[in-house]
Amino acid sequence: MSELDKFADIFGRRLEGTKQAQLRFVVCKSVNWNDKTMTATGVSDDVPYEGVQLGFGFVDIKPKEDAVCLIGILEGKEALTFLINAEDVELVEVKSDNIEINGGKFGGLVKSEVVADKISALEKKVNQLITILSGITVPSEGLTFAPIFAGVLQLSPLSQKDDFENKKITH
Image (cartoon, rainbow, N blue to C red; front, side, top):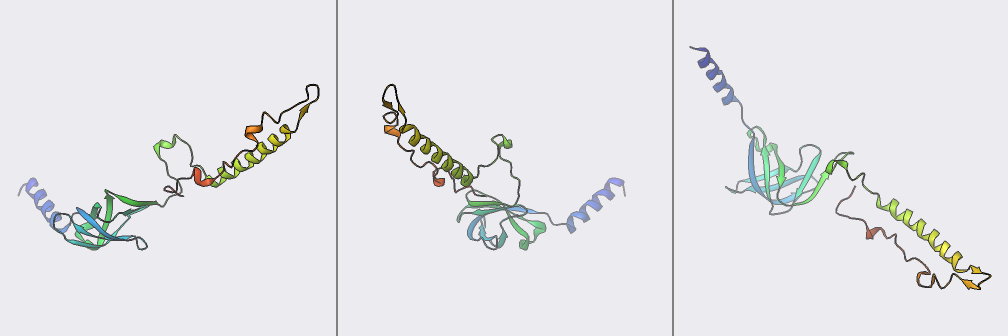
């Protein structure tokens, strides 16, 4: 028996004892977000898949019902199925304190409550300044600043958090 024949024999025995991971296209039928699982059926053969894990690490994906999904089956064991990706998702949950998008070139995420508080404080100071300046009279001319501020007597509230908060991205 040649060395090549021995290698082919060892390789063949190894393949018989090892089950390969499989990839399947399925359609999401229902999601249990509390358990982070879904029920799905195979696209090509309608085989049911129950208890498919919606995450395998630090990201959980909540697919929409009827979305086509790609799942992985580890070592041929249907009890070890997990979602890899979905064509249409309702939510993606990342379990990490550090997330970088676009290489971080736009800086950190703005905290909308802090921004709203800072704008509110600025509004109060500007309104106080407008009130003070409106009451000043130039003695030699007998003029007041009131006509200048007639159209801008007070700033309207700018610090409504809902005006600049995108609730589709939360942290």
